[in-house]
Amino acid sequence: MISKIVDVNVVGQAFIVSSPIARGALTAVFWINGPPWPAKVFAKQSQGLAWLEGLLKLENMSAPMPPRWWKEEAQIGDNDPP
Image (cartoon, rainbow, N blue to C red):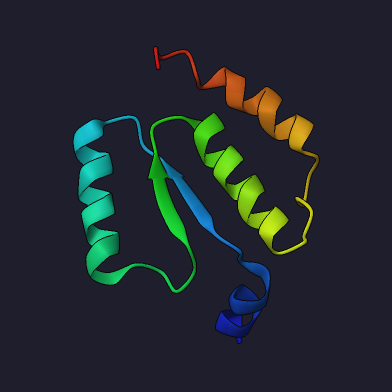
């Protein structure tokens, strides 16, 4: 039952991982056996949210919360240099 809910409601999944080594490892795991929906690993929350926003637009869907909230929250964790 849960899988049917996820199949209908999940457009993509962004993972935010600060460590470059951990990002690479998780990316490699996804190459071998990733989730059935698009999933990507990012260094910054703002990058992941922008990617998710793009996926939602491709599906003609809107975010469950306003993108403005996403961007305000994203700034909190994006203190690292680009």
